[in-house]
Length: 209
Image 1 (cartoon, rainbow, N blue to C red):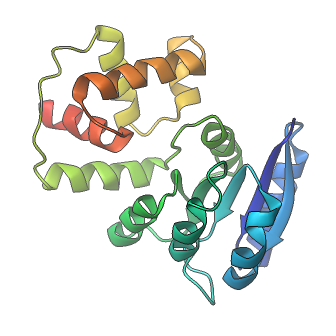
Image 2 (cartoon, rainbow, N blue to C red; image 1 turned 90 degrees about the vertical axis):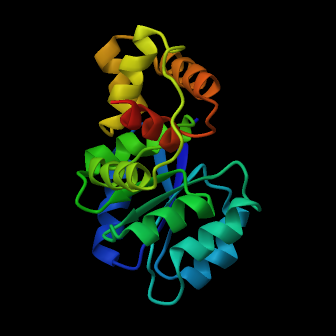
C-alpha cells in the first residue's frame, strides 16, 4: 500500500516540486496540498494521511500550532516539519508540539523522500544542520549524564551515527543490517540510558565524549 502524503506549504512552487517527486515514487502518493493553515486544520483529519509535510510558518497560521492541535486527533499520522527556519525556539517548539522530524528546505528532494519513508516507519528524520543545533542546545543545558558502560560496541556505534545526524536507513546501510535491527538497537539504547527519545540519547553520548 502506498504511503499517503499531504503537503501543507504556502510556497506553491515548492509545494508542487514536493508533489511531483512524491508522486514519482512507486510507493507514495500525494493525497492533498494545502496552501494555508486554515484549510489544513479543517480537512487534514478527514484525509487521514500517513505523513504530513508541514511548513512551520504559513501566512495565516503557525504550522507548529496546527501540529499541536492535530497530533492528538490524528495519532496514526506522522508530522514532519519542512521549513526554511532554523532558529532554536522554532525547532524545539515543533518537536514539543509532536512533530516527528524537522527538515530544512535546503535539503535535496531525494533526502526529503528518504525522510518520509523514515518517518512512516517510526523514525525521527532530522536535517544534519538541525541535528547539530539540537545537540548543541542539550550540550549547553548541562543535562545529567549517566554511564554508557552498559552499551554494547554496536550500540555505541549506532549512537555515534545518530549523533552525526544520519537517518535510520543510512545507519542500516552503513552497518549492512535492516532498519528493524537498527530500531532494536536504538530501543536498547533508550532503555539502558533511561531516556525516552533520540535527542536525550545523543545528548548523553556527547557529554560522555
